[in-house]
Image (cartoon, rainbow, N blue to C red; front, side, top):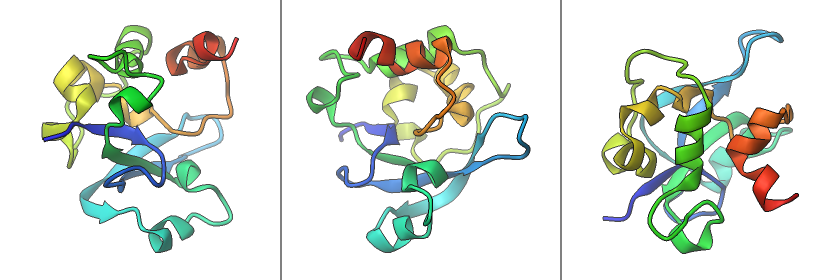
Length: 142
């Protein structure tokens, strides 16, 4: 079975909603509230995010694109590696997750990825040096 990417884009193979981005206050960072059942990311579901982009509201998962993804090095997801190496844990127990058994990040990095996963949002407008480094923007676009 193919691994699932926990940070996917709309339109990817077997795209589904993994969770919803929650912003508790203007000063707190956004966190993911995970769904407890599979919800395919259909056009109708993604349209519920309007007027925002679907990736501003939803965290999506899909079949890992492997060699079609700039984060994949042929064996591992470099994004998952950077998340674990560069970000502190934000939870101290495994969050509920409907894709864990097939998740590329979990299979590669173990629970360390899960402890950081709730803080990962697909769209981030705060591009600090750390955010750029974790996302790979500093490497891929500079």
